[in-house]
Length: 470
Ligand code: 5AD
Ligand code: SF4
Image (cartoon, rainbow, N blue to C red):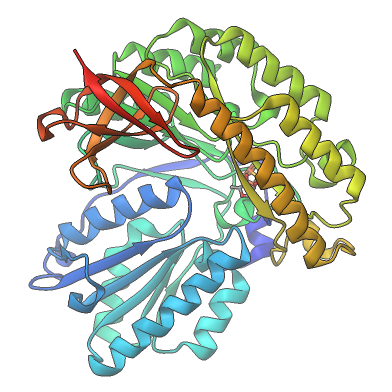
């Protein structure tokens, strides 16, 4: 049993990151013969992509994927720890898994992802959820075959969660959800330690992948007919700063664009490391999409300082304006937290002020959620939950107004859309514009996987409708 340790997870030194290569151990190859697995994924794209790795590892062991939990022999929850409600959802879902296990005790159940990195969560599972068979952390994905094997052999709870400072495992197989767009990790972890955020503890030290591995992966995607890659990292602008070669995000963006993949995206950006060279590269290449997610978190200098964000309201707005001026047609979205400990009415007004200045294409808004072990958890918080809810509501009204206005500008325009598949609306297709607007499109299935020109015929706050034009 290897339990998580938040103190260890916090350590950062200059020790060189070890790169190893995953290789299947043939003795695990038939563990999943005639067995089915179901995986439920919570949280961000990073987790979605981890699940794509987990699926491939399981399929190497001959497990088959099912989409109905009731049909599965192995049930895995890939969890998120970013806010309390993500937690609660997982514990709620565990109730359903327990119920199934009472009927079919041979089911193997497991928890992985960011919650598995939390000491408090794993202690609870160890003490009160003894029926959960396996727990493995974000640094242990490549060991899944051996963890599963041990659990099956010993029939006891297996917990393997490293809190290591950093390692990269290349070559982990992947079963991608889409044939047209792909997630590509460019870095793991985060060293920013924003005071509210648990990511630096659950994902560890910032480790950039070597450019050769990233470019090899993208080149293969191009050969396999992929149209779009999204470069993933908690803080992609800091890419390369931990490598001992002189190579940063702007170099990587340029090299990825040069592979001639039709669309390049990247998330998430931190305003701190967004330099002029990056802006130049984005504006130079037509295949780097004019879409930037630029978390604001708060518009108040006082709160930004308490959050450890390293920029002021003015810095942020200057960067925002520079992006708008230099990248034609760019769409910019953001993340905002209301009710950070001690946030006053005045602080909140500063946030609204930035929203009114930037008029975002869209924003994800959250009420501050204290995370165990982070500095903000211990900060004095005298703002009532009623007040926080009220602020969130006011903020959302403003955000929605600008989202709608941004979409209105698309009416009757012709825009490029990568058609990804069937829409939830009957008989429609769906896809995203270069600027990341969701579009429902009428047209035949032959268009799936293609980038087509779409004329926008109707506009809503969160989506557009359109028809294909030749
Ligand atoms: N409480 C509320 N929101 C948070 N986020 C991160 N940590 C917290 C927290 N403790 C939000 C930030 C981040 C997004 C992914 O989640 O806005 O950008
Ligand atoms: Fe969390 Fe800040 Fe790192 Fe983003 S940059 S993952 S908010 S610590």
